[in-house]
Length: 261
Length: 328
Ligand SMILES: Nc1ncnc2c1ncn2[C@@H]1O[C@H](COP(=O)(O)OP(=O)(O)O)[C@@H](O)[C@H]1O
Ligand SMILES: [Mg+2]
Image (cartoon, rainbow over all chains, first blue to last red; front, side, top):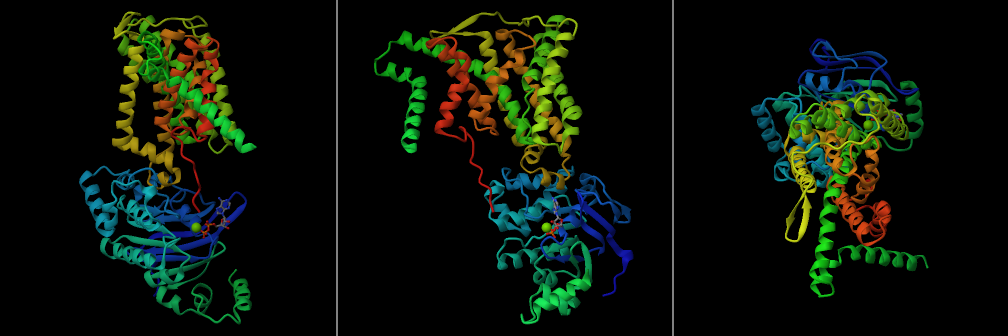
């Protein structure tokens, strides 16, 4: 699939983000086409979360730009980024543990004032995740991990985002639950027309759900392509899907890694 | 051996605490007569009233702590500023008592917001210890600044009240109007705060920002401004507490010493729990009043800490405290 940069809703260009002296993101560029679902794959510590934090303005980049709907949003205040239409489901879910499910969702709509629209979106979330309707009055901290993930996704949807950014929604969930949640994310993407940027370690489910993918290693993009193509790529198969036999693995990995850096 | 010592400690602590609540039972079993019981209840009533003031100060400390993890050692000085503002509006400017009280609470809230905005916010990211030191420093500065204000100074003042410094009787118990006002105000204030936190968007956003700051940022909640409002709320409550404390300690630069009752109250309730702060304050008020009456007057000054020690022996996390276990 050839990438047409002109219809990208989000464009990241050469960002470099630091934790003190540690350079976590080393010049990353990526594009997210409007209405599509794009995934960024990477092992633990590759810098996936840092990219999302930079996009939402939680962290500042030293260099490069983030453009959303043609407007420069580099290092913008997090609240203004939400207002522009980027909403995040943070890693580890981060629900408000002592608020009820309904109150958590209400906080997702904090910047909105259209009561009718908020109510409509609340119903939409309850339709996608019926268990949340059942648990509406329950304290979020008492939900199971999967239910908390559903709540975190719904809470992010409550701001009626144009772009939904998800940070490892599969983390700590059973394979069955992961499949269920990813199917719903895909449905939300198709049915609501919400563009999705998905950051994942679980390459298998991510590549089978998304349209386009980037592979991130130690703060750099080393590979990109349509998910269908990435699924056929030998390196992806070997290092992210674990499909090659183990005999040559150690050696090859070392060699390839060097090349990628 | 350690185990035996611990059990002994617990028995002593439990027995001492039981002693404070024993008179009604002693009366039921005919050990003491009704006049002795009335004397006891009289002390309990005035203890509850004093305890309400401690509770309000502790509540303010806990609100700030829960939100920002800062322990505000200047809460007493903020209360003192509130009392001076009330004194100014009511005595000096001759305003109606209730209007003056409202303006004083509002003025103190502004002072609290100013403290957060000007002093605390630039410190964000610094070690917690440094921020605590800054609040202590602010307390000292506030005391000397107040003493230099013309018309305030280092004298003691009484705030004029619309009701007599008198008592009414309830059964055989005499209750002063001052005490009744403190209890009534505290009840109304706690109810209002409960409704605010439970049902308003701003109140829920305050809870959300306290529970998970990062997630609050992700929702677009202006966390820093919310924290400033929490400082304002907490200071406003302290201002009202200062007004209510005035009939007993007078308005004076050192009236902020009441925090030395409020801190144990907050810890007693399980530092971080709002109902805990209120219950803790009232317990300390009652114990203080009872021990001042039945034991040596000097005991009164340390009663708060003795009861704190006794309760923590039995329940180290405080009355309403939860043991935090970090999930994997
Ligand atoms: N708070 C932090 N302080 C210092 N280094 C950090 C911090 N958070 C992340 N890092 C480093 O930045 C790199 C990228 O982290 P992160 O974006 O969290 O990775 P991922 O989400 O892909 O697991 C890692 O090497 C990590 O060690
Ligand atoms: Mg991460």
